[in-house]
Image 1 (cartoon, rainbow, N blue to C red):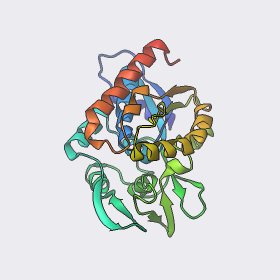
Image 2 (image 1 turned 60 degrees about the vertical axis):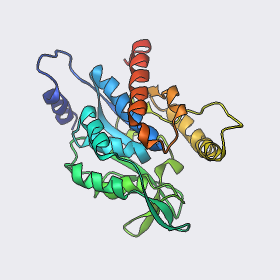
Image 3 (image 1 turned 90 degrees about the horizontal axis):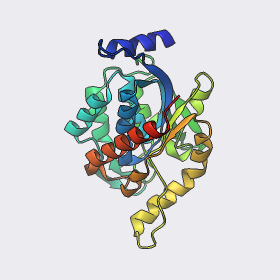
Image 4 (image 1 turned 180 degrees about the horizontal axis):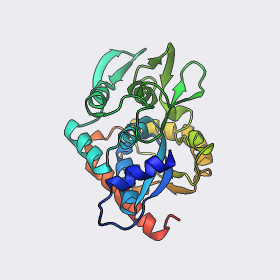
Length: 271
């Protein structure tokens, strides 16, 4: 497997480059619209010839991860996101089932993904969601890809749970927003990317700001534990000024992730 992945990246590199790519496992967090920053982070690593050999991800991170593991380069994924205005659509149902829809995301995935099962992806991908019955983390690495992505991204109350083989699943961030666990048994030197920095508390922040802060604090402790299992950790501080529903600020979010990671890799080189 390692040899096949290495050949995959070498073939994608410009023949004039002499540097052999470095392959490492990545874990990508959730974060709503801030998930756009994952593309900027991965772009900065690619500039240093550091590429994923496998990715574990949840929620918004699973969307970016699916494209990368599908063989797309970061610039190609960025174009897809921009052209299709990838975000959420309103679909009023009722308060019991959720009033936001991931239909737009589903349609774009169906239209653009080259592979639709985990087994057929060029790179190993592990997507985590939360079993809405037991509250336990579920890891998807086999079978249909798109239902797992949608399940991992379905925040309770806002979205309907996604049924997979008779079980209801919701956003993976609830059971672990930096799901490093699937990588630990077979990979080393995990690179963690977390796009939800906890910003200073602002009493004047308003209702939605407090709701979002409450959610971040509720899931932060498991993230801190997962961070300790990563060999290298990236958390762009500037992302704190963006909300999880700021889908109209794609370029600014992407650039924040890119520039922060470029600077970090210069100041603290990945070895």
